[in-house]
Length: 445
Image (tube, rainbow, N blue to C red; front, top):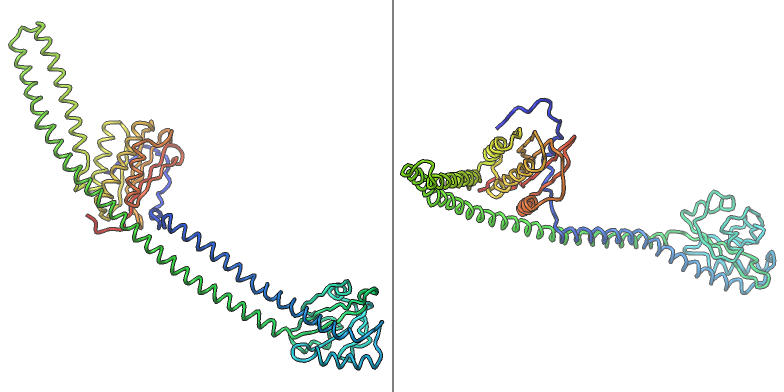
């Protein structure tokens, strides 16, 4: 049924087609996803910080080892601001024997004036430079290390060694405080290689763990989807059985009301009319027979109304578009509402989906006629990518109060087969009612 709308109807917001019936993980699946996200986040953080922690520990261990060697060397010397030639020769031998070689490639000894009093590079001895922050910190008693700034003038002879780390080892002079600081340059390769291997191992473990977690989550999701599908199939089967039982009972009740009650009522009514002809018109008996005749006629009218309502209830072979169109015509004739119904649905839905969507449309129109104080209703039956929807928009007073039993029951029926319901204020005025069911089974009953 299609009607032209009344003049200048209120513009309506287009229905969002194909955005309903999204994938539902369920409570177990949602919990698993959250747990997996948290676990991956924690693992990622650990993968980022563990190599840095290991690198720090390795550098501190290396710095401590170098300090121990330096303390052994300086324990055999007593120096003020410089060394004698004999002490320099002895120091050179000790440095070469205990420090230089393998990873350590340069040694410098600084005084607190910024002067280098010893180095395995003779060209540096006796030169004075501006002290760096780490060197100043070492003279305050701190064991420090850093990647050297090879652009500084005092590092001009270390630029060809490649990546380096330098350690500043303060030498405690007792009451005199820190008199000298050893600066030891070490190739950064062995520490960097160790950290790189550890980082690779951590990321490999993270990758393997993530794959295992993803497989477990996928398995859990598949299990949940199958369980959800079985639940929907069971719900549809039960609803189909219920509809069959209701259809049988509806047919029986219609027959019983018509044959066992309707026909005897006709005989009673005819008998009362015949009896009135046998008595004097206007007598007490005639008046009583007239009252009984009126009563029987009222009962007959009520019975006909109920039979009409039962016949309008969709049966097993319900055609959704035709049933809603007929429903709109009946409501329009009974209430005076102007209803415009259109449909573009082509996919045949299973019986539970058709019947449930019809009842949702009926509940929406019932609420409009009872509560909305509306004049105009737009109804659309729309097919989206994965759902079929009925939209009912009125120009009435809008939503009032909480959903009643009818809407709650409708919502439960829709959700039992994977659908849903949404009730919002319409654009401009009135109420917008949308109910949807999935169309995942095109080969339905």
